[in-house]
Image (cartoon, rainbow, N blue to C red):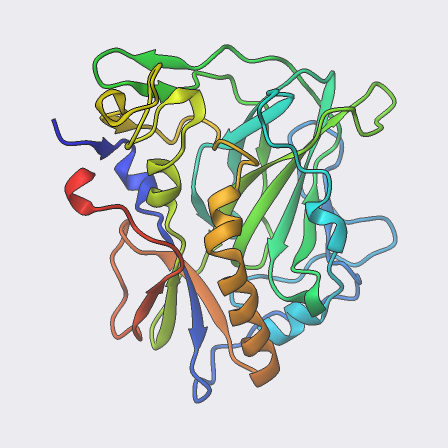
Length: 313
């Protein structure tokens, strides 16, 4: 049986980051808001409803992106500090989507030993070297230990049949590649002893005409995701090829930090592209590739990471 990736439509959100050529005039983009960080915050209802930080203005519309204005906003260099390897399962999670458009909500499924946790969305970009900017943060959300992942016999598919923990809104989120940081919290809302983990999500654009396309290789991330003991290339007691998964599912966390392959193979390309776009006044957009197909007349696409062999999908 040939291996393949389940939820192919979701995997199809192999997300694309697009940089417009210098001659592109672009259809207008949101300007930086008066809020220095532009971050949104939950209203405390546990569902991550959109809001604004105290004393700041509402976030700008994100129908199209002004990369220069976006990257002129202050980043948060501490966004990647204190990330856990995931071996202790102190906190881990996944989203029910790999890509959404701005304004489309998604659900987070989180398992943690902590009584509460917080989810914080960081957009990845240049930001004068900080490489991440906080866009949104949830209120403290009740935590719980979710059931162990199930393994489907014969095909070794690992699936986490968890209950949703919260719904994340994306109203006003600029298109781009995001990492949702999951932080365990103590009773008093302080950071817990366990480290944080990431959940990747992409806010895609709705147009790529005359743009250069950079692809987030989400199928690669999942093909090599060994969470639960199996990926498309190895698994089982001996961690060998003979016991590999024949089918893998997006319904499980990523192993390691939760975003190891994104950060290793793609983050630097995104940061570099946004730096060039900001310096030269270009525009960027994101959109799905395999869900809807490429739009008319895109410029050449560049995969940010290696896509798996199609014969194995």
